[in-house]
Length: 135
Image (spheres, rainbow, N blue to C red):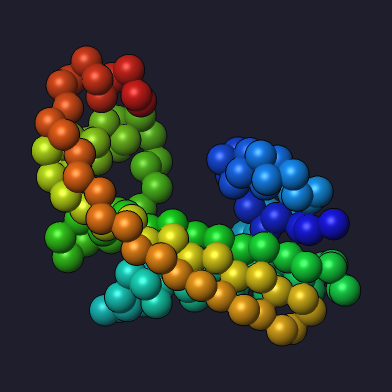
């Protein structure tokens, strides 16, 4: 059994698609970058902190932490806080290239291993109707 340190429906769905038995126990790690922290370091740090925090509650059980960061130019885009925020972000991403940084960390007690991957994504220009339907 694996413990997923996230309440993300998509992460849960991925584990289900892979046939990995798991239970969900979200962390409450604050997702705030340190000043000047590069996106890759930020994502790895959060994935590790989430995995370790939840692993402390589940001794002897593997815990998976993960984090994804969207980077547009020099800016890290956080999770949208509302539909208005999501609409604004999608307008910003429309017709532009951005990077998606995803980190995972697997913890067993205090031992933790991590990996990070960066994907370049190009959004075609999005119409207001497309953005509204997505949001």
